[in-house]
Amino acid sequence: MLSYWSDNRFSCSWSSARTKSFLVAGITFYLITAGWLSTQAVAQTSRNGQSSIQTGASQTALYLPALQGRRVGMVVNQTSVINQTHIVDSLKTLGVTIKTIFAPEHGFRGQASAGEKVASSRDPQTGINIISLYGKNLKPTPAQLDSLDVVVFDIQDVGVRFYTYISTLHYVMEACAETNKPLILLDRPNPNGHYVDGPVLDPKFKSFVGMHPIPIVHGLTVGELARMINGEGWLSGSKTAQLTVVPVKNYTHQTPYDLPVPPSPNLPNTQAILLYPSLCLFEGTVVSVGRGTDKQFQVIGSPNPKNGPFQFTPVDKPGAVNPPNEGQLCYGLDLSGIDARRQGFTLRYLVDFYNKAANKDKFILASNFIDKLYGSDQLRMQLKLGISEEKIRRSWQPALNAYKLKRKKYVLYP
Image (cartoon, rainbow, N blue to C red; front, side):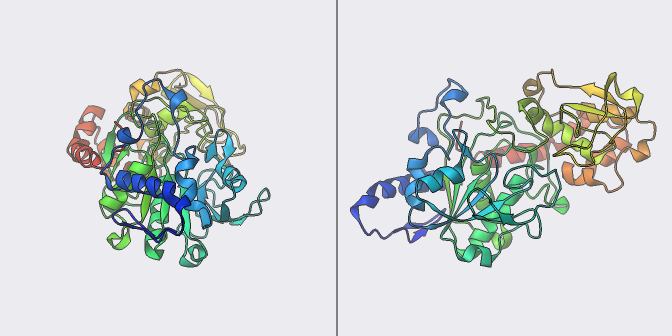
């Protein structure tokens, strides 16, 4: 059986010949995780597009031997699917003993609103205990991990610093490092992985919507980011998780990827996901990003008629409880038809709406939540000084360039 497995050490004791295939897979995982073997050596990268992509989860033959006969904890949500079947159901059918499900923001089934605390519960379909990592605690406790032999992380991310699934990843890695539990991460494509842009977070503004000194659009898959978290010593006490990444097959960072399952209630489609890096900063202002409409993160507006000709009225609905500007007619822009992939990350909408605000002192919410989203207080100050988007972008370029060099050490895909 596997006795020790980590990001920088690998030793095993084997009780039977049938585990030889697991040994090969384990060594392959180790070489990838340690950075000695590229994913191109494991699988020829295809340029035929999304149809040939195989997520880490879908390659069950590679990681199933590491789970059989062991007590498994799963960090998963509604995006954790293998060909439209939830991974929990798939693995249970294959005889895997799943003891605990850990759920991130929005819950195991992905139905809770943004910021809504999620209580621990029991899954009615499987009877498995669900421990919320977005409620009483954000990090698995030693007691919760004590009955487990291995933890599996399989959640679809969108490649944006303030999307909280990577904060959950951080705390799971930290908990596993502190309790000597191996962590197997089943990687998935990054729909915003084709570029890197935005300000790098100032550690003084670290929060659950920004835990790492990375730009808003970081250009990494969850597996690559986990390698960076380990490699840069970002876990508490500079601990290192026993991390194994099962990479995506037939994927490059330039491969467009449409998510098979919406990652959260208010990112319903690819357009919303591509616009999310630019529009989420509005959540620190009086402007609505379409929560409570059917075009979440595809429209922006407030009761100010100067914003633009498009009109919408946010309403309370599942996944958007008490949305900003609820019941008020909002004026602004409909961005659902633009080429968001080509546009990339931009501040021009934010700068434009700020300049049109009737009361600029009240445009930014008093909580200064925008500082946590942006990663510093610089944007708030620059807006007040009337600095142009071009100059704002120049101000973050040195830190962004340094990050891009650091990122190269951890990428698994071209």
